[in-house]
Image 1 (cartoon, rainbow, N blue to C red):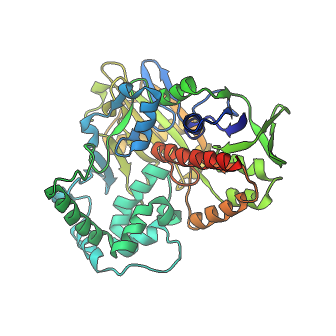
Image 2: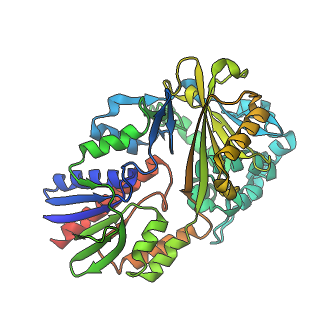
Image 3: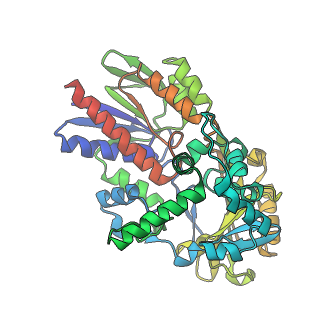
Length: 469
């Protein structure tokens, strides 16, 4: 019986445990899996809070269904029948720029009609086809990439909001290669983004003409998907379905490598032995665990920063808000000097997020561009969020319901040099056989990314186990 310890009971750790037991069963391997979680609950940043009839998401509110990873996991758990797709109106997304909410264009025709980008900005975007690709090895920032290929206005009103919406990040300090590898690949392969779109478009049309299925029904961006009871239903199902022993309140302080495996030192001064260890904890937590085992590996992890975030949930009587709430919500363009990064119209995205006759708005406040916001009092956060909602949405009334969640380390930031640091870290792990690492600090911050990384690392561990004979 091979003992495997998984550190962390967030989506990465729980999906790793589930994948490991399924792969081991397929190969006829006997394994004993224990999941060690520091907190007194499971789910990590997946937490759904129900209060006064409102359903508030502490962290992510769903995943996109255009990739198979999480959908396959839901099928494996037998909860796919419980999945809830977002309202079709949620495809309508907005950007706040120049003191106006602009609907984000969904196609070429709406882009040319939109006032989100000025005509000089649109012409500059069109000139992207004339920009030579960059072939040197330097890891370019998203801001530099956008200015070089698309122009300053596109950076401010398209790329900036996208980066804040996904990473709560600052495009000036984020790596294009690590944050959006597909964009980087398109430039390298096709010489530019518009050239890539043209060539890929012709290829898709030819494939459709030949009767080949080329896209999912969800469309290129997919549909945001969750559960009626919130995204925590996914992590709860993993805990329920896994045969692994899940131990909450069991934080690991040190990973000690020894002959044939590891000795894990816990906060309560007890120890756990394991032949294999999978870390699915944040980079800053693993950094401390490895400090005595491999100082260089620990130092590399320390170089992965995290952006802080306040998540502000406001509930209102519907008749107190004059504007149409048919949509996903909005992000704020770079340089608009607002307090928040954007606001999701949660009760318009999924049903049952607010009591009848009321609405739930969820604002993101802080991020890499405003890290000091995490130090504000609850009243200051409330007042500044209200000021933004009044300016942007015309809401004069105070909210009837308020819930504020604090994340001092919300989302890892893939700053320039991220890929190089990960390669160096992988080389350090070669000196610690049996230790595997996954989680959102490395190859993607979304739920799909985490599930995919967990599947891959589980496959590598099972291969290593079989190689041991």
